[in-house]
Length: 115
Image (cartoon, rainbow, N blue to C red; front, side, top):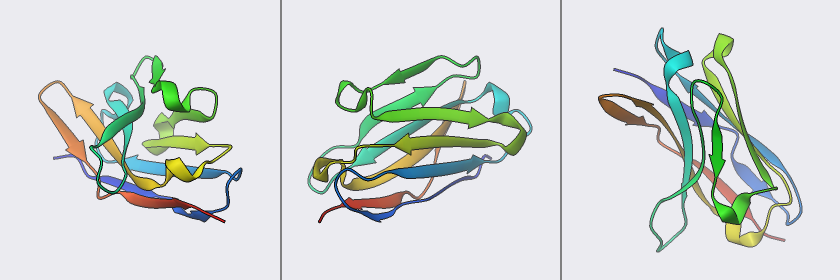
C-alpha cells in the first residue's frame, strides 16, 4: 500500500505561481513514476505532467513552458511548479504513484485562478 498526499493548492491571481507538493510513502519511491493530473468542473481528469524514476518528464501541450515537474527522492516528494497561471488552470490537482502492478492516487488539492 502506498499513501499519496498532495498539498500546496490555493487561490491565486492570473499570472501568479504555485508549487504543489506530493509525498508518497514507500521504500522504493525512487522507482515510482509520479504523475500530476487535474480535473476541472464538468471535465474529465487529464494528465498534466509525469516523471519517471530515471528522470524522464513529459507534459501536456497546454502546460508546456509553464509547469515544471521535479522530484526529491530523499524526501519521497514530487513537486509541480506552476507559473503564469491562467483561469483555465482552475481544477483539482491530483498526484499519483505508479508501480508495475498498481496506481495509487491522492485526494487532490484545489487550485483556483481568478482575479
